[in-house]
Amino acid sequence: MRAFDYQVPADALAAMRAVAGNDSAVFLAGGTNLVDHLKLGLTHPDLVVDITGVTSDEVVERDGGLWIGAAVRNSDLAADPRVCERYPMLSEALLSGASGQLRNMATAGGNPLQRTRCGYFQDNTTPCNKRRPGSGCAAVGGHARYQGILGTSEHCVATHPSDMAVALSALDAVVHVLGPDGERTIPFTELHRLPGDEPSRDTVLHHGDLITAIELPDTPIARRSRYRKVRDRASYAFALVSVAAAVDVTDGVVRDVRIALGGVAHKPWRAYLAEEALRGQAAIEDNFREAAAAELVDARAVDGMDGGNAFKIPLVTRTVVSVLRGLTQENQ
Amino acid sequence: MQTEINLRVDGTDRQVTVDTRTTLLDALRERLANTSPKKGCDHGQCGACTVLLNGRRVLSCLVLAVTAGGKDVVTANGLAPDGELHPVQQAFLDNDAFQCGYCTPGQVCSAVGALDEFRRGWPSHHGDTELTRAEVAERMSGNLCRCGAYTNIVTAVQQAARA
Ligand SMILES: Cc1cc2nc3c(=O)[nH]c(=O)nc-3n(C[C@H](O)[C@H](O)[C@H](O)COP(=O)(O)OP(=O)(O)OC[C@H]3O[C@@H](n4cnc5c(N)ncnc54)[C@H](O)[C@@H]3O)c2cc1C
Ligand code: SF4
Ligand code: FES
Ligand code: FES
Image (cartoon, rainbow over all chains, first blue to last red):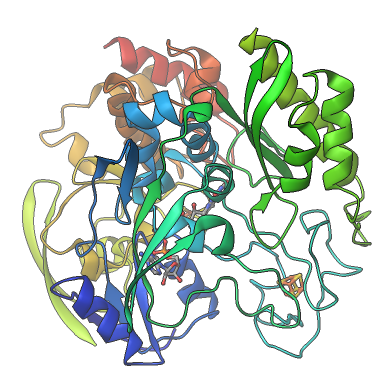
């Protein structure tokens, strides 16, 4: 690990400036991803700026919704009674992620910015376009089980590993950012990028942009919502596929619906096509299946020496159907 | 870069100069001679390094020691200050909840944290309102045991919860 200086800035502005003004500086929040990456040699900053004290660690009411400070720990957010009552999918997503210890450390700002768990990305000795642009992608034909099926490119097929981010995408959360040009907001669904020909960039943020808060708009439909995570073991494992969903059914008809998918793409995947296919339709299983099919029209499996990830395509359909069935049965 | 930090470790104020790259785990083990927290994976995956930081269970291998300045650290050693065992430690002994013992200090600190979280009403992914075996397993899933002593660990945590 390269030696680095450590700084505790006085406030958010000073933190932003310290990083924006130095190409080799990074923000440190809970450290659960960054410290691991320092050890793996995936990042070698010469300045680490501790931001745990400069953004809010509180969840406050605003305009009927909730405003989550970037320093709120994942465990506190998951246990917040307002989150459990009004946005259960978010609490469930957080609780399905990592472990009790890690959730006590991880923050609301850091979680969505964690990087892919693609094994080749984490291994400095293999080709990886995300880590070393132009070096190739070892995942295609290699270990492909955890890779994506939607929005992949010839340059990168990695998935975004966050559970929390899938719920935030379904909830139309808004990210508050402080950058060199001042404050701005970014719709959560537009925070993460598809890999395209520039897989090294996970998000639309620029160097020095500090996430200060995440805003959950007032979302009555989310009061009855679910997060379902399918994985290789019952706990402490990343998602193969996950589904965050909320649905409003009146007189057997889907009035409104929110669906986002995890484990399938380089970003949390908001399933707009499935939502559109379902709105105004009868809340029956055939329609749920067709909605999932609509979302998966362009799905493409990755071949791999481990058998590849073609299994994810039917798995998404089955998980979407199962979650919607559960929600609509409760609804009646 | 060398930095001086003050920590409270197992009830005693300690001062130590560390390189900014040093983790809390290495500072405890290599600099303060507290070998209670163990290094299993050093990447946040096994839980052997679990300590209580300001009362909460965390992984000391992913905490930079410089960020722990001014904080209160409790390791499994500090849970038995005068040789009197903490109920969780006693329960591990009573139930033979270990084999080689390498994961045990981490398991014990994690169990203390998990029981505190449960008492405060924090929900879990499993969702039982009682500490059933499945509920304990979920709350303790961040602690791996290479010897596979899980069956007795779960029983021990259940016993400690009743203490
Ligand atoms: C063994 C293991 C299992 C895990 N399992 C899961 C899982 O199942 N599901 C899941 O979702 N996650 C899982 N995680 C990942 C974990 O949730 C993330 O590492 C964590 O949420 C990151 O948050 P942090 O605050 O620790 O971020 P840090 O590690 O501090 O930072 C992560 C990145 O974000 C940047 N950053 C942090 N905060 C800000 C901010 N406010 N503004 C701008 N940039 C910022 C940092 O510079 C860094 O690049 C697991 C991690 C481990 C080690
Ligand atoms: S899938 Fe992306 S992250 Fe993984 S090896 Fe290929 S380029 Fe790298
Ligand atoms: S040594 Fe810290 S989690 Fe394994
Ligand atoms: S008792 Fe040996 S690793 Fe758990």
